[in-house]
Amino acid sequence: MFHTGLVSISFRGNTAEELIQAAKETGITAIEWGSDVHVPAGDVQRAAQVKALCEKARIAIPEYGSYYYLAEAPETFQGVLACAKALGTNKIRIWGGKKSSDTLRSADYAALVEDARRICDLAPDMTLCLECHKNSVTDEYHTTLRFLQDVDRKNLKMFWQPHQFRDFGYNLDALKALLPYVESVHVFSWDREQKFPLAAMEGDWKQYLTLLKAAGVENYMLEFMHNNSLDSLGETTKTLKSWL
Image (cartoon, rainbow, N blue to C red):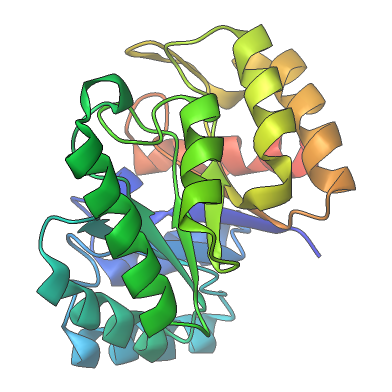
């Protein structure tokens, strides 16, 4: 079953309760809760409240979008892990440091590998997922593959999204290379800093989705509407559902 979901950080100015209501009204079936605003890392009570609200609304919580940066503040991971468990999810988004891969010294890289191994071993029942973001060790898919192989933990995986600063050919190659690791997808239509209605990149997305669906990926999470308005969620959800 495919989840047409929402990444909660798309609407940081709205409450969790408002997002759950909007999800019910638009046919969203899942929400990835962010750890910066809606479910702060370490606030287990709030995580339990949000879980209860989602259960009542029949909204799944397939993943927790944390802001844990590898090798930055190791002691904060326990709070992230506690909230993921309170939310009832087994997937946590993490970040591959704060430096681009081509500027990392060997010691910096080794520290990222060591911390990734540490948290994977601390949470063997969780799947920890990186993203191909700029200013991180996973900013390019070849370096991402190398990092995944160097960490060498079965519970280290990937969220995937098109790189808005790269062309379609690169993104298709990246998806093919990373597909065995992909657990979830963030869906949007961006070209560099410019956002478009989701339907604007239908041709690209249909090719991505052919690969993703064949691989059994189930979670497709809408991230940032083109006009940053909650009023656009219904239209955007309808587009994604038509593709799935």
